[in-house]
Length: 176
Image (spheres, one colour):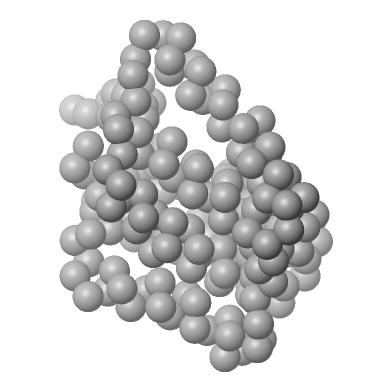
């Protein structure tokens, strides 16, 4: 499971990248739409459950058990990855490109391209699949105009993926 924590090997960049992703939207747009609305939080949790629960159940019902994700990794996933990426990609780019289906699609392409270095430097084939959850996060943002529900989905998807990484890597992309 150590291989999935490669974000920690970026040294000082692991702090500068989230800072950049949070700062640019403020400098360019002046604000990011993040509101603490219970309806939006419920929507983010509901979509997360509907989309992610089948993956978790599939693994559980086949007898496999997810790995526990350490608390410090969870904190980094929330504050160093999910929040900054959603602020930048949904709160800034999707707003600039249009908070509509076209904007969701274009933002998702850019989101997937941003994850390609994981494939190049670490051989992480899962980076190619980031386009699909990005569509979900874009749809959530399009419906709510609030990054908080998409942050909830992003965080839940990342934590689920980290817990299932070893199991999935042997099923989908066997280690040779």
